[in-house]
Amino acid sequence: MVATTAAIEEAIGELCATFPNAAVTYEGDGVGGAWVMIDAVPLGSIYEQESSWIAFQITFPYPEADVYPLFVREDLRRKDGQPHGDGFQSVTWGPHGRPGTQLSRRSNRLNPAIDTAATKVLKVLKWLTEQ
Image: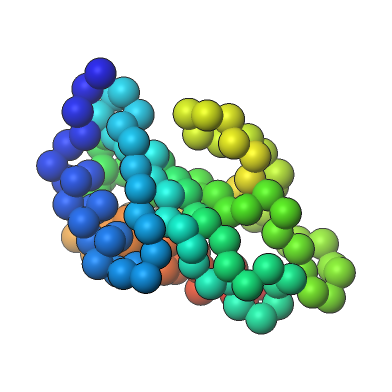
């Protein structure tokens, strides 16, 4: 198994600092990256559930590679009963084939100097609460 890179270890440390009230866990993906889960993050007032885990893979080329896609709980439901819009898909993800809801939010103009794993998660959570 290939160890995670120093940049990925640094990203995990930044995630721990950004989400101090959540458990940040990770496991190597075997090719230099890592699967990361943050449990729990708030979902906002539009969902039946108050919180969820959020998970994603940080791949070996990070920080030059985007953190994409991200996943949240599989039973995510809106309070108003409306379906999710674009960017949501029910999938199985990760090394253990866990069910979840994929959030497709690609960074089209990735700037490795400012687009960190932590800023990506914050942006996706902001987008999620505005749906």
